[in-house]
Image: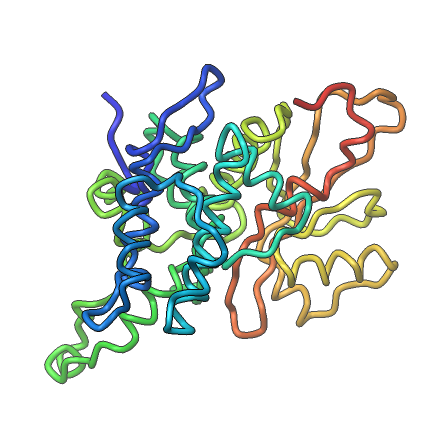
Length: 332
């Protein structure tokens, strides 16, 4: 029996089409209108109260611009304009996956919070039934900012928000005196505690070892394969590499802003200095099966890198827009 995870993303409120893609429901939309930012305060005007109550009853109803303009509070007007624009984006397409692809391809501007939530619920669908805690934890990099830390010679990826909460907890003098681990010390995912992932998945409090040759980087490669299959219909293999090979980069995709900068330098024929090499967290080789001209098939590299402050936020949209899709035989 499969176990549930990421309950807070609202995947249980959505329907699926015959291809297994996500269909928006009224209940899913109502969650947006119930957000604290949109709940009218006690002194809200009649126009805002009427709009809010109406959308909780009929979340797909048309809202005229004049209705928004009649709201007295400027911040409230902006919030409603934003969330209704987002609602219309989701309703414009048959599935959430199609709505997301439109955002990515056409670079539509929406709050990062909404886009990250959309990525999470799509991944929840992609990974439904997965029994591998390492793959699920690696998937969190697609929609949660990470803070990398060095721990016992390993490079550990910690959820940025959870790590900040741990760091803010005062250290116990008794723990320091007895040289004991602090009660708020971060747990790192391993074979012994992997079974606890499901019950704590919405806390995002497990670290992931991204050291070269460890399970974390391989698990992230597995997530990339599933992401490409679900959203683009591509069958691919992703293999982690342990070093930057001395080969020309015929094609590369930076999985984050820092990685793109490193890739640009390598593309320009520059070598990575020691500082740049320290920032490189992961390197993969991506192989896609179907090319119109196999002899011209490029070697595709995927790069993952952290900032000088050891922060990391993966940009999954780069995987969807950065590949040589025009050379493929078929793309769904």
